[in-house]
Image (tube, rainbow, N blue to C red; front, side):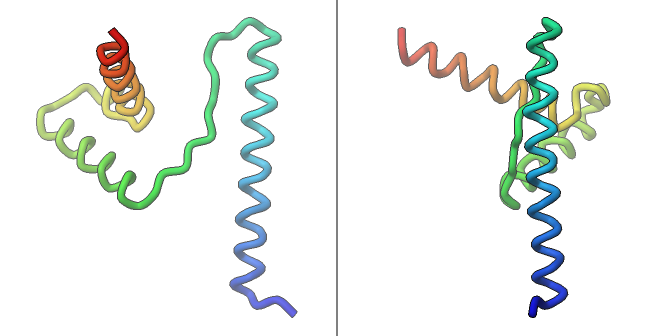
Length: 91
């Protein structure tokens, strides 16, 4: 017999499976339609969430435009910077 907590975890992981399947389906549909945007399944740990929140708090302090202070915008900037760093190492 499962506890209520175990049932909640089971439901949680089933929802994750649905999200992952939705992401896969959306990306396949985007490919078929010639849409270049892709979705990724990104799981952040508590420390990473806190870091993102600190960046967003700083961006609020310096009056960054709201559309540039989203998780997606910040992660896009970070990826671009990391890519440039890697390209510098390769050169």
